[in-house]
Image 1: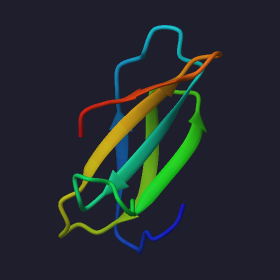
Image 2 (image 1 turned 30 degrees about the vertical axis):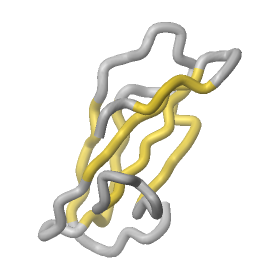
Image 3 (image 1 turned 90 degrees about the vertical axis):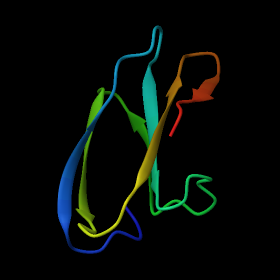
Image 4 (image 1 turned 180 degrees about the vertical axis):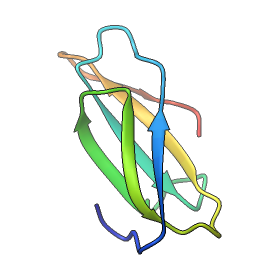
Length: 77
């Protein structure tokens, strides 16, 4: 985890993607995700706890599923 200060802990939840073996989550203050404030790969569950989010900041988040042959598309933010 990088660029996250002290603050709020939040569980991010999403629906499973067919044939997914892992997921990547990105969180950013900008919908373009040019420099995400948080990024984590190889998540094997459909929920993930992120700690230290600023309670006074609006965040966008997206998920990308990966199957055994390639990387799938990002979810909508």
